[in-house]
Image: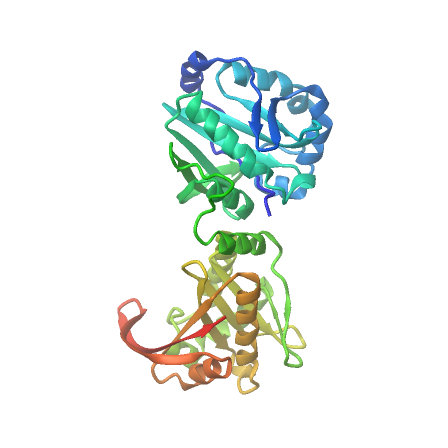
Length: 394
């Protein structure tokens, strides 16, 4: 699942950096990339490059002005030549027959540091194109440009770009909030880097790479609606139309007593939660599903919070008007099955405040084994309560 593309925050090198980079000026060179070639751009590549930039996923995650027409396209080859003269390589990625498969570039950002960008063409996804190009470009940066660091960034949610970076040895170092403007809209972006000696070869994947790959593929796709074994119940994503019912459920006395939702829960809290849920999906940390009845009404929710690779914690609540139907147990079973089958989970943890017999019954019906009591677990800020703990193994 390598259909990665990223877009650096440093789209334009500032004047001082550009002036300094002139000392690195070079003629365009071709790189070999494990069965591919990174070649200087030519006019023959432009029709296929237009097709790349017309792709919806490229539009979703690249920051460049789109659609790619007019002056930007007409000046493209000359801009590439100027970048080469300034020591900032720009390559077309092609196969042995010369067909365009993507693009890769290095840009000087700071002293002894370059940033990398890459795009994989829609028709070349799933073939390891980005990984092979990244290795060739990073080696060139270290060996030929004397770089001591290559930086990477991608808009949060671009799990394909992140996976390609991690697979080739980059370390994701954090999130820059509003770190990039994408056609006038501020977007959070992941940031990371690689230093000499860290590049991973094709036979050297990072630990738990299979888990990372499965989860990247899941979060890059649209969140699926899930059927259940219970008539009248399905699991679907949270929507704005659910928020009045979310607020009513979270303000319920039992929900307030046993969960960590804010005290005095209001519709404003629900609005904030919808934004948080979407942000967590983009970051790939949480899978949140609504329990929806035949009329599509919000009747509760189940959630997986991902932790260490292969592990997650389950959370759930049921609306007062839907209790006693067995729907929460069915929802927990279904989302755990999704976790084991689609997210490569090996273990799902559960906990509940001691005395929350309803939550314990749901967990045990779903197959969880209650393992003991954890004393004074932090329930909410300033409040520590004893909690039952348990787990379900895949």
